[in-house]
Length: 370
Image 1 (cartoon, one colour):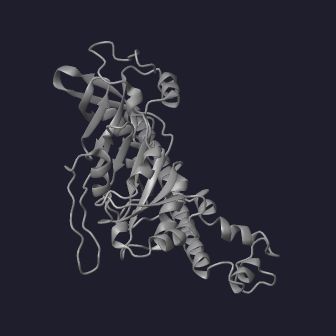
Image 2: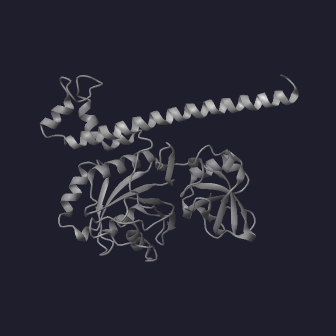
Image 3: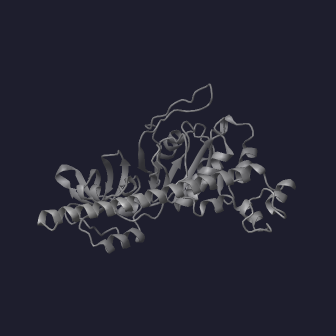
């Protein structure tokens, strides 16, 4: 959509949608649906209500009953970062959300609880900052997990090592992260001292969206305060006993930066269970898979098989055994959730057939068919 174009023909265009990330991909999706209404982007997701970026400024949003009814699961509903089609009610300063446009990328995890369902943390993200602090929160295995999830999302991962002013061996920590996150940029920053922040400028620009993910207390809100030049975001002190933090952010908010671009803050995650590990494991564990290609058996378990190149690499010190353990753990987790999803899909299909048969039986009874 060009800056002088508007799909809303009533009212004045205030802000071009390109500022919020609109591009040719979403333009094509919008046109293919031939739906009435205007494009808008989800700026905040409050569960039952939304804050929207629109051509008419910010508006409150609510989901149309039809969309809620047609959504098979929560992941079909709008999430922060989504582009949607709305019916604006300008006099009331709000809009009704009728459709969710297809996503270019989505960062998902398994929703909390026993039920296996997808929770979309952020949608249509270009870059994800995996934020971990250089204190007791620093954990290479957690970084591997986060980076894997980001690769699967369709976005590009970047590791941010926060609170560099509190660490005496920053360069060593950077090397450690680079050894488990191949091809991923790593930046050490101190939001308090302002160190290293200039290196992050290249990830922002008009229409570019960056999401921040990480555990509670790693400094995401403090970092956003420095990037936005606004100290209004709530920051909680970490506990002195274990360097762990509490949740400073309760919602997912897409913030427009003065320099151009958008940043999406997310609540701290106590755990991240992978939802879909397609190519993400291969990207993150390229070293393990590279050695595995040299194994004599294609299905080598890297245990007792002869001519195992992975075990040989470990014995020669070319591969950290913890890398293999982490890789296999994430593989098992991915297979488990894939199996649970398949079982859930079969049950859902069986229920749909039973419901359809019951509806047909009810119709026949009303007609006196049997």
